Amino acid sequence: MNIFRLDDKITLVTGAGSGIGKAIATLFAEAGAFVGVIDRDGSAAEATTQSILASGGRSTSYTVDVADSEACLELAETIQESFGSIDILVNNAGIGHVGTLLETEGEDLDAMYAVNVRGVFNMTKAVLPDMIGAGQGNIINLASIGGVVAVRDRLAYCTTKFAVVGFTKCIALDHASEGIRCNCICPGRVETPFVKARLQEYPDPEKAYREMASTQALGRMAQPEEIAAAALYLASETSAFITGTPFLIDGGWSAGK
Ligand SMILES: NC(=O)c1ccc[n+]([C@@H]2O[C@H](COP(=O)([O-])OP(=O)(O)OC[C@H]3O[C@@H](n4cnc5c(N)ncnc54)[C@H](O)[C@@H]3O)[C@@H](O)[C@H]2O)c1
Image 1 (tube, protein in one colour):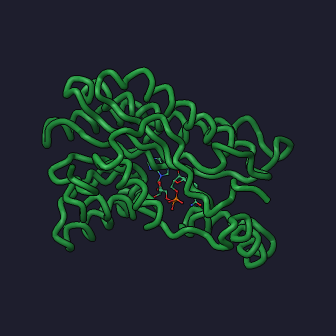
Image 2 (cartoon, helix red, strand yellow; image 1 turned 135 degrees about the vertical axis):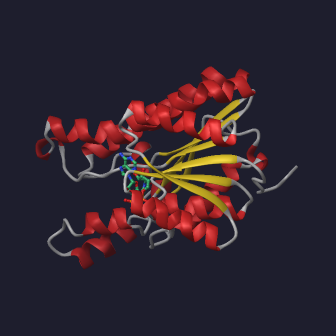
């Protein structure tokens, strides 16, 4: 078994211009993969690709909004024509929202759904037929601890992340016999630009930081690289018997109070 190696694998990571996606793209390249770095922020995607190339890795960046189904299809075709079958897709791109139901408008939920659920659907639909044709494929979705337990004041976010966990299990069940594995990662709080932006929505960001860190039994937030390590495990043959799993990396958040 080629433990924790992705040599010659064609991988795509969405939302790889920042945070967890950037850490995953960087680690996959170190493990020997070609990495298609996808982000709606083209300059952020290109910066990740340049950093991978500077370290001797292989990567190309693509500016794509995963909420746009046509753009996802075109992207998959372009990559398949240039590099061949896509082996591993990481659906990492996601956005956040703070609020209870009373503080959430229908438009807020639609905007969250378009990226966090429809984006995962769009990219998976774009690559799955080719994976099935190749007789193998591996899909990893970034859900959240908010896709497993309720998080206070995160009605829209949790609703979309519970959907990602359900989507993951359905893909795993429907396509296991065709050589496809599908898992999702459920992180607790990770110190990324995503979380730093959320903190600024609080009247006292420093107090909010301490409170957010304390929801984890370990009393701290994760670093993006700790989530990337789990993505590498799920992407590699090391995890060959794992599919349909919400993989919790939550610092003990869900262990109890
Ligand atoms: N940071 C956390 O604490 C945490 C915890 C649990 C789950 N997650 C999940 O992990 C994923 C990554 O989070 P992060 O903290 O690294 O976020 P981030 O904001 O640092 O990075 C997200 C990246 O996704 C890109 N993106 C957003 N919408 C997009 C779209 N429609 N199309 C293409 N690219 C798009 C952004 O431009 C950005 O580069 C998200 O799905 C998030 O919900 C994060």
